Length: 631
Image 1 (cartoon, rainbow, N blue to C red):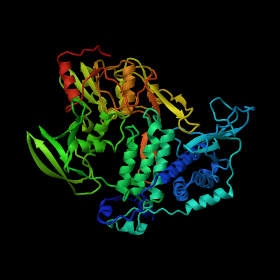
Image 2: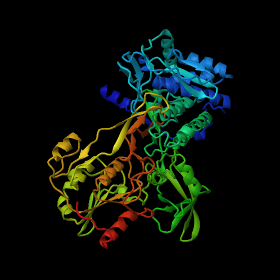
Image 3: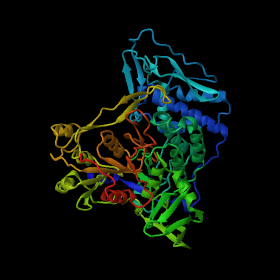
Image 4: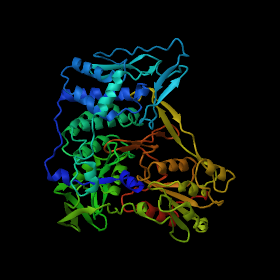
């Protein structure tokens, strides 16, 4: 019996695109007029303000997704501002009894409390605590905190404002109104598929159609949740310029979601929306889960065909060469100019810098990916000056490797180049520190070591780097943001505790490895001329390490600017297409901007051809162009 239960609980079923393409869509669609969109936007903003910034313990297990579906049905048809005010008040009063709506921007009635020792409660969040109610109790007022029982005013649109307290002296009770609202939300039934769970599980080859996203209000509710997480907790909201265009982006996405006729169009609308968040950490999953043990996901397929996408040398447009052929280029895909397709694909992914966006396209095979198996893609190619047409078929489960980033897929950790130069791929995820130690004798004799930090390193890297250090190196400037107010107002920044890597042969080595949780290195110092390769694929933890090495002048960084994307990752759970995003604020040590900029190399070698930085560096080292004293 236990084995059966375990099997059932882990059931995840793939969903191919055949259902939505072979039959007429049964999804409910609607072309939203301007009044409806403005009403939805007002509901969306009020939801974000109250969910995240009004302290109410009784909402710990509240289903906000179902609440939004229920609420959308009540406000969409409100014809006047006065009618919308009444409906919003009825919707939110059970959750926030003090809430008020008005048509003018009344000043927030805020003044410092006469008694600063008055007990009060505030709901506060970091980027990572958005999933739950997070109410803090304060026994004394501190400067910068919301003032207890004061009404704060926030704009919903030009003719509508909401007012409510952010800090309260008494927490709300679980009133009959709130209990009724909870029952109403629970009565909204969400089914993953049209067919019964038993039928789907035991007949996996039947056509499965997503059920819970059929009503357009369910799709709009999804967009509202995404909108508010980014609006209140995305660390670089202002750096990305979202304070000026996020409303317009989300309002267009409401329209696109309401018009979606299948889950693939909805996914495209979501990806297009999130493209505007310039964060290379963002990944929109294809999974779906409405709270039951049965889950599903959209399956992607790829052709046995790889290309190398590169920006043209003049900075305008792209070349798409065939990965395993010389002088062969794709010029059209299904009759459309290939550069237009590249632009379209870039507009459905998030990236901190354009170069990293192109790297994402190259690495994930998105240029040719399809939700439909055995889809035929027609290409026009030119090869050695002659043009011809070929067909490729999406029948593989994984993309074919581009030849632009061979280090990404290499399983070799340490490679002797010649008698004096040794190459170490420290982003190799198939090797361990123990594997590295097998080569310590070779590495100790090398006059030049090239450490490859292109990609994403593992925790093994800390132990490896310790062998090249003279002094301990420290973490750069990463900050936690504490949000007490909506809309990124009065954010409190706190530096996260620093961690260090000690030299492998130092007396601090054992203590540091224990404290900062990396494997204790062997007591060996490697004296060599050290070069570190970096480029646009060096992201996140790689950038943390590169900043440490650059600041402490360990080695010479060679290559190009890094991805410009760093900070702990946060996962935002969603019924459909959960996503990851950056969850910490990172700047350079002097306070200047890192996001969308990246680490600057000491020596620039632009990566416009297959593995050029490594080849060029090896040649220049060989001819003595770069020399450096051993560390």
